[in-house]
Length: 214
Image (tube, rainbow, N blue to C red; front, top):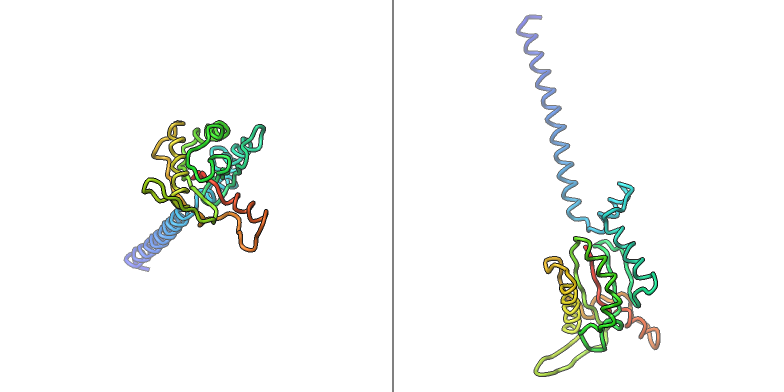
């Protein structure tokens, strides 16, 4: 074998090695981009569940927060009508509007403010965003006062806004808060086929203010 042939063979081997390494690099970059795209579509609640499983720790996660909030709600004196769920989109805290508001009203009762104070104090220690959602039952609500028309939609929105005003006075930053009224459109209990006491209990469950911590 001549010197020229030996040099050419070594050059080909070096070129092949380069292409193999370059190909591997492209595969790694593509996998990384796919992971980023996938993670961007994962709800924060689902992501932090996965994170806690992978790391073996729930410290500083929504998983830990949901546990702490449940303890506040369930430990004496507790919060009547409240519940906590670790959902896909975050920690959802449901508060009974029968405890918070008088029928058809949007001003929070003073005694209700005292009962939810420990819950809010715990949430205040975090940096998560909070959606405040107002929900009514399916019973049509219509009231006209001083040329203002009120419906289930406006009532749910006003109750959510009333809760935001309280959170602001409690020390929550406005940049963390968002209010939305859903009226009767997002029931947690299906009323179809129900009647009597069962129907009234279902409607009571559907009347709520939800804090979605995400």
